[in-house]
Image (cartoon, rainbow over all chains, first blue to last red; front, side, top):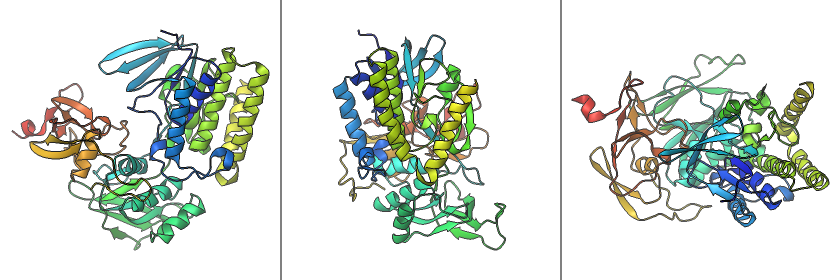
Length: 363
Length: 112
């Protein structure tokens, strides 16, 4: 068997993009993913993406996912599915669990693209069945084609909360309201307008006080909050919902990077603890690259560009691309990334990413 | 409830009809879908009870990470139903999770 030169952990937007770039340059690449099929969370993104033409704006996430898988096949990327990477050990050894057996594999370069997990929110009753992540809801309705309940309350008016609310309506579900503890809507105005036009109120400065129900959610109690996040007396309201969706942010899924010994930095704008990386997406450990939500929570479009950077850098490190060619290609990607990192979210991301470079220079 | 028609995704394409045995009752499912999807579609919300306080738990992350939806499947405890494909004739039981280091038991035995 041909020896793999790059193992990519995670076959989502970032991992597939990284694998495609590296394989196109000639590297032998294998993507490892714990799921039955690659594509990460792209297949549940049934909305059109933003950005400009080069970012494939106007294309639905699920179509981008299908295209990525096709490109990966054409580039000769190998995949190992239903396989969990449980650890990384010195010498770039990966510990794998596949079915009922374990394996150990090694490659000169590892690209970690493990993505993110949804944040939870603790309030009385939050463990009742019916309280779930907004991403979980999205998986149920768009992938599994089942509605989690009759009527939902959405917690959080960021882009995820707004988009999943709209997708619940498209799926034939009902959303009683969106509550947002901040005094403003965090998500894009175009998404907010869509849900409002569909008749869903967005209650800013409101939070969920508790979920009630015997064996599962039967109602939610919400209230207005003051500037100190305290509920305002007399503003409590009972909503007859059986589902409460939590859209309160994502955190990088960083366990493998921690185990590997990567240096980390705490950057709230990027979702918390993030492995420090340079402009090539190389972590503090030589030959271990990071990309996508693991390298800071942004969007699928930026994740793919970061993946491309990691893939190009890895191919260059292996000698498949000359320094000049790699630099030219990377500058193209950097320019697209910079174009994506404009606007209210983008400025924060761009600044946070610069923090990394400073941290690495000081090291 | 199943979503048959969808403005973006169109008509649902599902696999062959199969039947699961869930706590002794027949539950309709489709080949290729995961166990959790079939159970949510059938109206079930409680997948397991916690060890100490017997609190109900259901689907939380639907991604195979949080382990809130684990059940006993064909005698095997702690099976993540949100990432495990349903197969015809599968025997699925509500799980009561026990303290660490102890085996898990099914609910009926627990009540005896």
